[in-house]
Length: 306
Image (cartoon, rainbow, N blue to C red; front, side, top):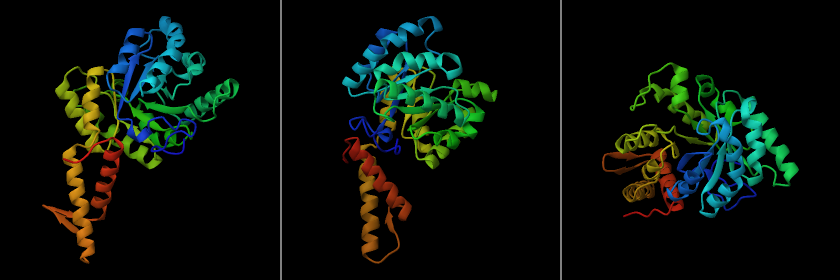
């Protein structure tokens, strides 16, 4: 995986990692939920074989994977799976689903780079056996412990397959010994640190899911994640997907403002000045580059200014 903003070499039609705004976990053994999920608007769907799938249902969930992944991809959705840790049912999960060529494999409870290296080796072994293009299947480590947060950079750079890292909520709060709250103050530092280390590693950071049902809280949480710098967020509730997509997509108003910031800076430079002015904002080089980056993202997502 060359980088977070690029597609896999053998999957040129796959939505680039940097444009995957919403990542929805779906119970892995619930066929109706897996089929229905394709209609919710998520950029990425995750067949969840760990916490959302009781052990007794895992064999039938694995058997459904190939058909489900094909249906998701036909709908333009990035099709992924979360297996169990390799030392638990993960090896059986991987063997059972990899024939369907998932676009990415999520590994839960990652706290050491060696866990990613081990998964990479297993995927490579299956790819060679099945004749799949080498390296096309991405890895998304799920960081769910204090130890994992502290090692995010090392985990993200442990394999060229890693395209993104995902931050947890419930397991992380439990590991921290912190009461879980809607405001998520207990996760504030972890969310900031994971994003910072993911940026340093040049992979996408996926913000933690909002694990309460209310829409107002989800909206506030998604906007807070965007303010931290996230451009992607996971979800466990299909109704939250539209909220996440909106929060992680530049609005027409933001596009218009970015265009004005760029124009102000370029006009100032043309006049021999070091910086421009847009209202009360002194437009220096970082603001200029940020505005150009926003316009590029908006264009990629099909958003025009008002």
